[in-house]
Image 1 (cartoon, rainbow, N blue to C red):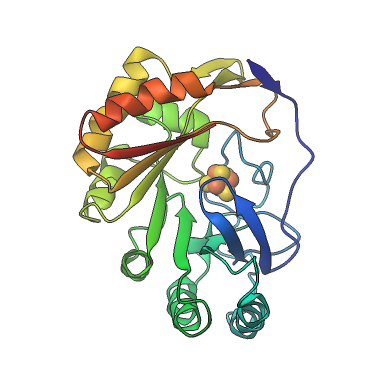
Image 2: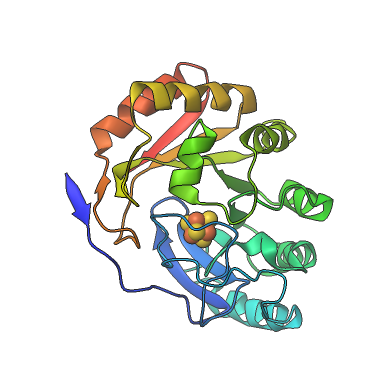
Length: 265
Ligand code: SF4
């Protein structure tokens, strides 16, 4: 069992960052659509590697200009071409939730064009909490990329509230309906943990919790599920990293439903 201590905040200080060797994506070149000096997100996950969400003013936050990305990405892809670090994935991640950027859809289209020209073997991946799926442009952009990786850390609203702390009203049944619209062309990413926060014990690994989560997974019927554990220090202190064996047991249950599942621990 590993207990994680309160973290020092980890932020990406560039719009195009890496490439880094990612446990889930291989050599991953990151695109950070959020500011380089602070995190902006619609969630406030207790395990977020970027620390707590302090800026709740999503509408008024200043985000990097759309035109900042294209030339930087092109230059980076040309530099990496033919090297050991030619990316397996061009990944929208960074200091918060990428789909909050008002030009997310356009930047995705431009990224796909640049990928086709300069890194045709790379997949375009988006890591998202899915909070903007109600915007048709965001939904459509996520249909265009190779891998849309959407968060689902629990099977009940209570658990999601406790772990992800969405800043705006969150309805789990509405979120699941949006995920079903992907017709299986999505990856579900689920982090399992236990620990105490705000005087409350949180544990999404119990029999009841895993059953509720699995029921939703069956409804969503994703192309793949990734189950994983905390990797670095977390903003909430005292969270416990769930071991690989336990994650494997959860994965076995998903695989029994005919859904490909990978474990990262
Ligand atoms: S959704 Fe992602 S970026 Fe936002 S708080 Fe959660 S882990 Fe951090």
